[in-house]
Length: 230
Length: 230
DNA sequence: TGTATACAGGTTGTATACGATTTCTCCGAT
DNA sequence: ATCGGAGAAATCGTATACAACCTGTATACA
Image (tube, rainbow over all chains, first blue to last red):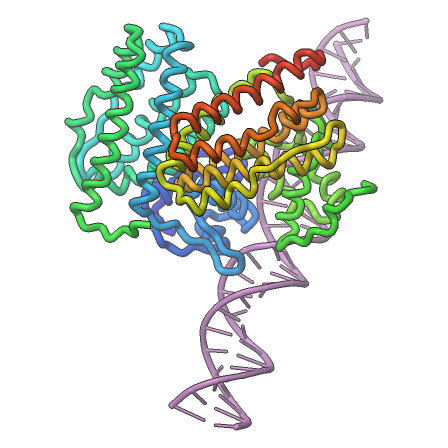
């Protein structure tokens, strides 16, 4: 329980919220790797609270699929399977492309311009902190893009899904340098939207999502990560 | 806190699970109508437990969108808006049609035949218990149909969404007798699937979902329910 | 009369203690 | 040596007590 870095500085409204955010981050960034065992007691000690806020955080993460817990046996970080990656990307493509279509119909020029400011993202190969920063910005961009679709329910589902998928990205990022490949992706998308090319924008997004999936899957397979297929 | 009917007989593994199911049912069936105020204390008394299991149930329902709670102020059942109904149906159509396409590719003949047994659903106008039974069977049919798509993540999202939407159905069912109109809908869908007519099956489902939405919206508007538009 | 402040009531947030359930260990009987 | 059972340890499940926080009300003061 030594270095928790800058996480410490952030002040949260409630302890439960703090534990939730910290634990989620620990899982997503693979500090708690897939398969790791956790108990409410150890987590309480780690975060300096009692078991009550920990329980609440664990329940939320369980519902999001970032943690599994069996009664009287403790919790464990779920393994990452190739099938789950495929399923998540399939669902993401469905949701995000639909959201994009709505966005192109409903978003104002000003909103699109505002989004453009968030489009620039990049990372440095083998720099862990830069990964976290990159993924957070990327997450933000996609969530705000979907928010312009003005369907709260859709947005909520997509936000949870993208949050869960962050873990896949962390696993894949260190296995190859795709920075160049991804440069300008967001800008291209926004440009299509700003010129009213809805179909082109959707094709563009779909292609980007599939490329992302293929990059991750290829990297994982090449590096002989022994992930369960199912 | 008098009659809780047959709910009492059901034995659950944990108190929290029991409260969750009972409270969810109370909200869906409009026993706790939109806008109702609830406190952990009153719910604990109502269900005969302490606040701890109640808290857990409330958190789960909050994440599903069936309850909203503000710190130190209590909980309330969220209002039903026309926009929310539209958003949910839009998302449902997207998810369920996609799931159906996957199902038609992946489900075996035996699985489809098994589903056929669950297809028959009906209800009696103005009979509240028959509403609950009908909606539960209908829910079950759609969830199992989606399960054959073999995408766990998609299934989970759709199950939560349909659960939330049950509340809309209860609100609309008593406002008109649509039993005849809906008779045979499920059977028709299964028949298309069994004969490999994927596109026809999807069109069929899409039509049914939109009809359902229109019935509810029309009934609510005709009856001058003063729902918030946004 | 108007305003600010102190106080009381109610509600959720957290800590602690205890109970229920599972799992493992260890010891004895066969 | 192996099997079975009693008991201990670990872990989650629940109840209770108290703290933190928000809101409305009444009161003191200008």
